[in-house]
Amino acid sequence: MSATSTTGNVLSQDLGAASKKVAGGKSKKSNWVTAVRFFAKNFVLLGFIVWWFTVRFFSEYDDRILELEGLLKKMTKMIEVQVDVVDKKIVNEVGELRKEMDVKLSKKNELRKEMDVKIEQKGAFLKNELRKLETKGEKLERYLSELKVDDLLTKEEFEKFVEVLKNVKGNEHEGGGLDEIREFARGVVESEIEKHAADGLGRVDYALANGGAAVVTHSKPYGKETLYLLTSRNGVHPKANMMLKPSFGEPWQCFPLEGSRGFVQIRLHAEIIPEAITLEHVAKLICLLYLPEFSLW
Image (cartoon, rainbow, N blue to C red):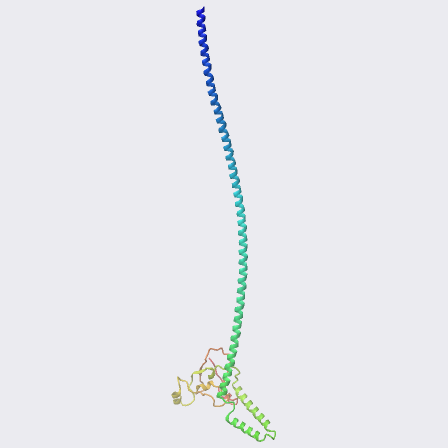
């Protein structure tokens, strides 16, 4: 019994020790697992926290980016609106300036046209006045040449006038000398006026020799043919210019042509527009006997 009990005690003791060993091993293993689980949970929690903060940060960053994009769009639109307004203002100002320049240019052109018209009118007026002066000068020159070529008083009339003056000086106390001078002067003036008016010219005569006209050719003159051929120059008789000098109705102051028909070609000093043509005759008593018909071309 004792041996058996002893053996049983020994076995019980061994089993108790084994059970204790086994129990001690399980406690160590549970502590390690607990630590692993703790670290795993903390790691997961840390990862979740990091993920949460990361997501939140990036979401805020995206929101800020969106806000910045919105602000940029708004600023761009505002700038575009301002640029459009400025462009419109510039276009309007440029248009107004162009209108002002066009108005000024049109006024300038109108003033220039008015000045041109005034200058043309003034030039035409001056030309007309110059023509009048030239006409008057030619008329005066013609009259002076007529006075030089043809004296107003003939030699006989001048001698008669001198005798009248002598008689007046001899009878100046008798009272009738002055009346005689007046009567004589009146008669001389009337006769000279009648002679001057015989040609019927009251304006510039361009077909006169002193006005630059010349005889180019003519038909056969009246007279001896031999003398005409010897003295003529280019078929023009040296006395042919007598046709271009006023005779004031005095007989024999002419250049006769042979036959009942004849012609004369006259060259003027300049081109003119004829306004009147007068053919000078001799005195009224014999003018109907000569040149009843004539033509010009």
